[in-house]
Amino acid sequence: MKNDFDIIKYKFKEQIKIIPIADVHCGSINFNLKRWKQFKEYILKEDNIYIVIVGDLIDNQTKNSHSPFNVSVIDGIAMTPFEQKKWLVRELTDLKEKILCGVSGNHEAKKDNKATDQDIMYDVFCKLDIEDKYRPNMAFIKVQIGERNDYNRQTYTFGITHGSGGGTLTGSAINRNEKFGYVIDGLDCLITGHTHKPAITKPMKLVIDSKNNKVSFKPFYQIIATSWLDYGGYALAQQLNPSSFMSQEIILNKSKVKELEIKVK
Image (cartoon, rainbow, N blue to C red):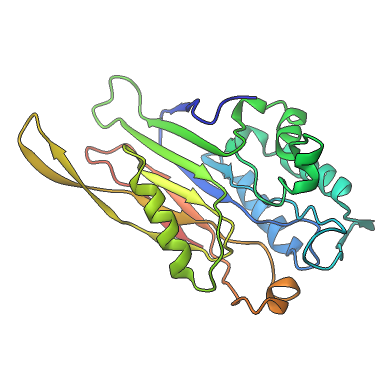
């Protein structure tokens, strides 16, 4: 298994789009399978779209979980944790060439798995034969758009981690992620999930250029990926707020000035 700090590097000749996928929670009775199928169909049609896996793709609910042990049924099969893992491998098989990286979420890394030294997401990536793209806690990727002699070539850097913490309102999640983003020098975009509160912000950093005696401003984006759960069940019982579905597309271009473009669907 690769170290978290081993950067994953890519080079593309032309524009690409990156979509973060987090908190699918296959196995939950609130998982929106119809929306997932529509999304997957869209991804497969577009040649220049890639994805990053941000954790909690399966619910991995056990009898020791805090929420009730209720699992969904897909194609006549009760989605137990074992079946969830099999489903995820099947669903990602025809998407594996589009996966840039992946990390685990707290549902894949539950205490029951830690006690037996299991890493569900690593197993999934091994079955897909892309284990070099997996990082257990956080993935750092560097994406170059444009060829070596291209004047408009740009390089973008990303940090991808599932995220942590609670909080009822979206602002608490944004504050936690922005604080973490400030400690990563050279970061263009931090992508997290976990909170089921999709959001995009663009905080600024002050940068001191001692060589040229200048102070400049450097932005970085903070993205909280959307959840694939319909409202109800555990969220309702815990008095958590409903969250909207907001798929984010990150567009990386060749340009004289580095600038991420983010579209919401």
